[in-house]
Image (cartoon, rainbow, N blue to C red; front, side, top):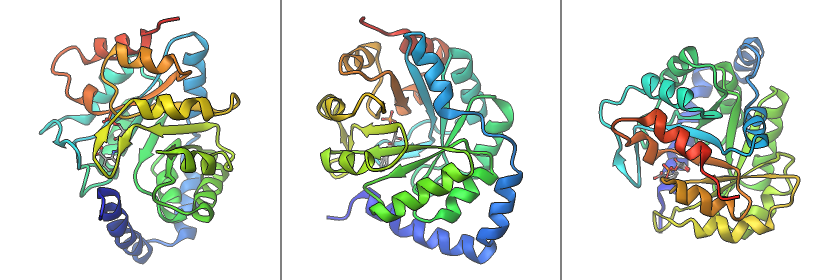
Length: 267
Ligand SMILES: O=C(O)c1ccccc1NCC(=O)[C@H](O)[C@H](O)COP(=O)(O)O
């Protein structure tokens, strides 16, 4: 069975081939090294988590394979401003075009408008995409273990940390979690979205969270929309949350919605 992820990874290799025809790794590395200082993605979450509140990575995505069009005609810069005003720790900006409607142009426009640290959310299959991410000012990249083998995961991770970026390592099950713990990043994403069945289930984080050692940080990802969801995941130790679709779909009061999720707590 071909999943949405399989489809995305297939065209990412085509995108990388096109990028390599247009740019060399050396030239992108020079641009990456000349980009401004990183904004400190993990550190921004640590500061909020230390207060007892929830560190939110609020996501900008126009559409997705599971949801289709999320907010037609969305103004991602205005939404990013609302996320920042509501107290988000960081932003995640989809830069994949075909499946998520994103772009590096969106990324740049948002980066110029807000001061939050930013994750370039894309499907990375080659270090040249990491250099490209930093050249556009990214502070963090995503390494999706369902999409790469251990050797490529290590290469992407080393390349990112070499540029001073943080690395969010994304897992979906026990075997990916075991692989994630072989990498140095403290940021362990647990994605509640089952990419085969295209459903989200917070029980994924509940099942995997106890397996994450105390020196790593759980980032609960996908399917989170209410303070009750956040409270449920706090019960298994999560203090960092990646939230996209539900916040994109808020019609009025997005800033307040972010603040409510940031403050949700049971303990
Ligand atoms: O969202 C999808 O349909 C999707 C399909 C294939 C690969 C990845 C996909 N989503 C990426 C994400 O992990 C989410 O954008 C992120 O965790 C936020 O999730 P949500 O709050 O449910 O929008």
